Image 1: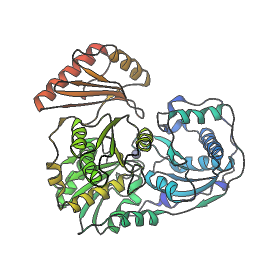
Image 2: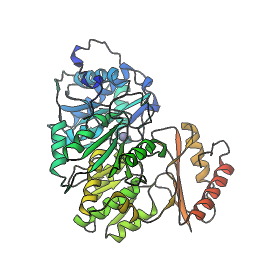
Image 3: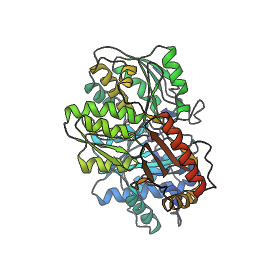
Image 4: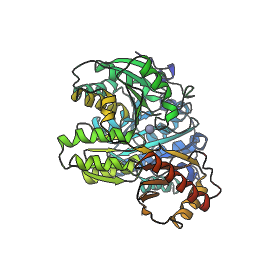
Length: 480
Ligand SMILES: [Zn+2]
């Protein structure tokens, strides 16, 4: 079994923290994103992190709760920041249950199974290593931008609750593992390579798959916030090459990769090919629709057009929605959907799980699917429609460039395009579509293209490049 780095053993009691804080007069806008607080960790000063804890505590008190589960990822800045966050929660009158160094799904699991439906996770997910941030759950719901703005207003208006919460630590790892074991029934053992990217999944993912009887080949399953081998972001092909090589070398049944906080999944089949998240969703949707006929299945704006067709063919209702884990969770709740997924690798199972995005649980469901159909991962991949498409391509852009570019492009739509403006610009043409949207978490414009054939994809790329060059000549399109 992989051992966590010594850092994970450190449990500083925030009550020993004797720091005196000053509530900030200004807050950096760059920290308040569409569905998280996230940005350069240097922006999260001790005073700001403490104030965020106080503001979250105030919101928790408003909904008549008095407790939160709190976790942190394995980033270099996390050990220094967590005492300030916890001090703020405690001084706001909220009890803190410290879950230690965990992936985000463990924090979510805590809000579904412990005595509170509130939780905070100190993580910047797949963002660069010098970033950090907060994922916040109140009454079982992820905060969206409006409620994140309320937190900001509370701090600036000094509208903050006071009190003295109680601090305790708790390890919920075993109950999480047991919950997955109870829901998984494999007929044979599997050889599985796990690439945790030296991130927060390192501690628990190998234990989960071993508990399912798998032979686990761990890859980078120790915590190291420098992410020395590759960045923990399985949505990028270059971050999957070690996993591909290991799956082939060890003749493994499948390889799974997780992002910085293990709420996202990457899959490599036994023949070394990537099964992208929208393809994973095609498989998961077919399985879920057997249990939930006619159910709505939600997927984000970046996903393949084929996913819509597969869901319809399996008798489900496809619902295209905005990118972002909190937006998808809210839509899932609104539609009572049993399954949702995003191209970035967030997969959300409502039953028999809890509706939160969990890369580790999604990996176990993938194994279950292989087992149920007695099919190898490569065989499953071959059942999927062929897609001439690009992965997510990222055009570097500052915050202001993102805004001006999107405005200019929206005012200069190409001829023959049908535009979907739900989230960015998804333009459909006779032979395919492209999407361009501003990333809410990183300094990029995200682009994806898909067409009916390789030739049509090349033509679509040229059309796209011409359109953007004409409209926004300042953008660097070398990734297209
Ligand atoms: Zn993540």
